[in-house]
Image (cartoon, rainbow, N blue to C red; front, side, top):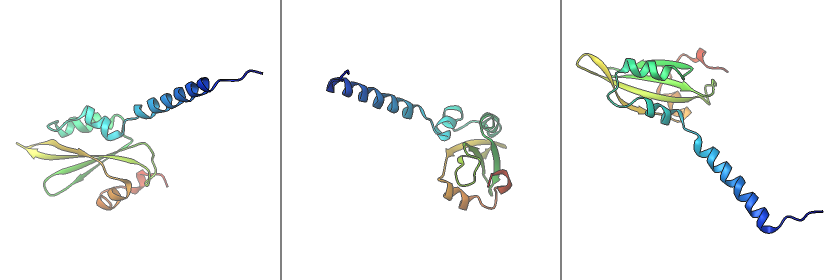
Length: 123
């Protein structure tokens, strides 16, 4: 029977920890990915086109002056979906992105309850 030395065990544990750290570090949230593709100053129409490529649902939510565009990623469940919110304002007659952000699920539920179409989500 072979005995693995303490140094061998520590080496194996170190490799496992390194792999877990690398895998966890590779995850980018939908907001991080959106910020890589869309920046402040981007035309709203371009932002919608770009983010709609990976989002499974897009919902425009007009305000009095600005427009919040909600893009949903990940889970299709109402309580688990990840949202990216792109806010645009009119400049010289064209809507231009001035903010990209996100909310925790229950925060966007309350903030956008009158705008969202619940039938887009799974139960």
